[in-house]
Length: 350
View 1 (cartoon, rainbow, N blue to C red):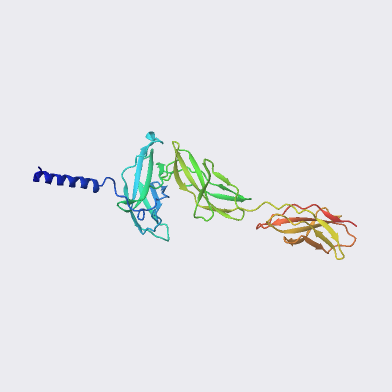
View 2: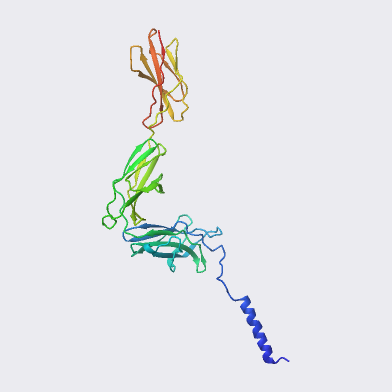
């Protein structure tokens, strides 16, 4: 027979099992996709003589694609590894998160977040990543990871010059000899060229090299390009990005003439002599120039200029019994037109 004590104990036990199985949290709560921000994708850094400034763009949407109105905070993670202990295949030992203030998301502009870090130690490799939070329990995935070796960076190159050529430009500058704090450079210096078409968005071109000039080929003639060069200090084989040069612009110029016209023929008429030729197949031909020499002349003289849509010219300033020889050139649409060589001569003899 059960006593009252046994019955009460059974009821308490049943309740305990129910609570443990139905209400106890075993994992952290999972926030809905509608409030989890997209990950930061453009974490980047810039060095100065004092330290490093990190910047990144506020996410504008959740991972579900809905608009965000604000970011509560950013979690910034840092890791520091002495170069002698660095292992490329080992996990990165990130420390506890540093809280960086968030703010209102601007739907029209890309709002930038910044964080400055100073008192960095030479001979150490630094790693950073960041995620965004809309609340204490809704955080984005990690951003891209940036890394750098700290050293006082080199100054930016000086004395930028640019010389335009046909579909190319030669950029040159003076070698960098000082660090940003005024000390002499004691490590090798490389230079990385960056190019832009709008003087706003720059992209690297070519590889970083120790030379102080760069020939940029395969450019579009008539287009203005903007260049700047960054110095890179190589500290025990590790790159330390330095300062930038001033921006310089250059416009590639067309220096390649069209091919000379072919099929030049002449026909005498009652009013003079007509010259015909085949239309050029080159798209940038603007016009043709007609040259003539008499039998007594060695050097032909220009007697006509014809638009590129025509392939005929009439020479009415001739004598009926004279002997004349004609040649034709093509010229292009460059600001200073490039003129072809003269075609083969065709003539009228009397």
